Image 1 (cartoon, rainbow, N blue to C red):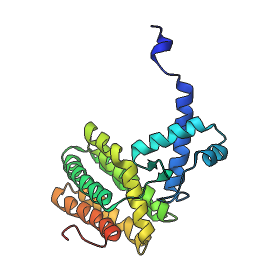
Image 2 (image 1 turned 90 degrees about the vertical axis):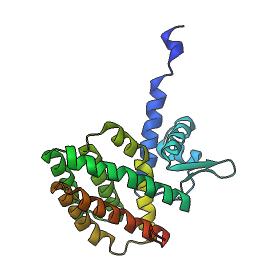
Image 3 (image 1 turned 45 degrees about the vertical axis):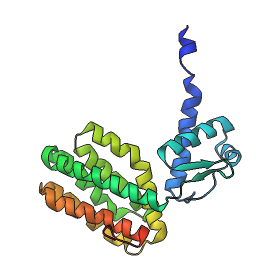
Length: 222
């Protein structure tokens, strides 16, 4: 068998990735809210591409957890169910615990400085959607500082869904969100800089709990 018969052409897949990037960005910016329909015809017209790359892009976003498809509704931006919220919260908690312990034990001072630098950018966030991006970037930096490849891969596997989780959270309420979040993340960074694992674990848990409470109206203990 020739090489041509073994592999699929790359050009079209590259275009599908670009389309996926555009749709993902529209979801993260709030242009498509949870539950919004993503119609292939409209997207192909807006992006000036054929429907094939759009269909591939929607499948990619479905694998990321950002899109759901149903035969009677087509593709829609994922609306997180109570079970989705609970599972993401518990899984993120488990990953965060390992990340914090690894950062305290293994991260260089430069790694932790990179985490603190992201926290310092949060004061400049212009709106809640930008703040969510900063929040995700902060956790990107934490997982990078852990220097644990498989842990970082596990984070990347749920990263888009956590972004959607936080978008859903600001969709419920933004009361105090912009004013409180920067200081909260500076506290997280300071605990990591002090190599205080227990304090950092408590602060990371409180950080998750606040978003969980806004989304569900309950606490972890309820």
